[in-house]
Image (cartoon, rainbow, N blue to C red; front, top):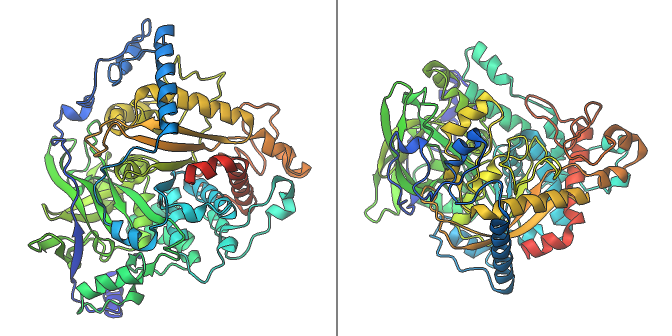
Length: 635
């Protein structure tokens, strides 16, 4: 939606292809109830109730304090007998997993199940997820997907998810105009030797890579100074930069296909809605089912929220439904001590997210929603894409009520068990910067995670995961979070995050797998073929997210990383700008046209055509260098 003065907005509504009646009937889906109780003030800053005895780190008092919150009873550094036990268990787990089919899942049903049975019943239980990372992740994801298409693997994938910059890619790709040639839109993957300076300057007019050259992050500040709504300006910037060039219609609700759109229309015969009122997924049969995540930060009336008691949860938005996949009450607290509880859980048709539920049918299969009471009217693709990438929102919510109110991305949240409340939404990365947990809840058996982060993975010479806890300069903190391993903060801001965001809340895998994963990633990175590793991992119970323990899942981790092998194959004019003289993954080009490649900065920075082409071609090259691994991961 755009930023309008009241009169033009009224005129716009009069021109909509449906009546001014704002009451609709939405399909609803219930969520499993979490066994977690509402968090108290003490709970919010203490370890998970699933914690066992705490490990220790002798001779390092600060480390002892951090490790007191860790959940698995093993110590750093590891003594030889402990290391041998871990190695033996890890080998046994992988041997068992490789010789037997994946464990059956008792995952609950989800809103998309019947549609996927209708459209994608021949696909395996697989998913890919694109991390946050602004325009860097947007471009990298385009390269990965085109390479998958070249190898015939993309049509095998059942689910795809995006957070922040990864969501910019996924939303623009999924809802692109069906008349676009897909290869021209994504851009062909050129082998390293064809990446000359002149070639890198060339780009098809419809190629999505060219959209990374416009930054709009400062537009919010300008909007505030001009008395406009910065959140609306953010939505407009996301739409104009990424979605409009893809042919996505503005201010339109969205659905999977005409069948789903017509089901919504049938439930609302007097609304004036028709199938043409919706943005539809371009290829719902061959493309994966898209899910975008954004964060429910808390009630806007409580801002500023207590910095050390953050109880964020993830809202999933798909072309079928939008909502929270686990039902539970969540307690929130303002800095002044005021408290409030939201009963979250359940889904509505995505078009009606943000419209308060006013009544429900006897069987709870439908509900009446009132869009006239919504902060934002009917929910659109650009609103979903913008909420998922609203990175500053978590910060705004901790500052002052005035800033949170003026700069906040506000929406109306309501469920059959919750009276409507105005809430703050923010970047999905405030919860998890790549969507792994939604797929674990769905019982997906094979998951590929694309980690397109700003900082490289430290090499073996600088970080030994078997003897040291990770610093936040060693590895992106979400990776150890999944294993219940705390990262040593590197700055005052990081310490605030450490104490304010319970690292153990995202623990879904056994801790003793963590050092083996990191070591394998480091070894793969050192080969020059890309930091790509597949591991069989065992889940642990996580009541907060509703993840069931004891399941074996195959996860492929793709960590954006420098490759001297790729650089050596480039034409001399490009190679000269990238050579650093060593294989140190953290030693990146300091300046020149490709400074920090492949970890281009995206904080208010542009990625020009040359950079976008080189990054996308590099990411596609990594996929093709590891073809057999990905064929196994998605086959």
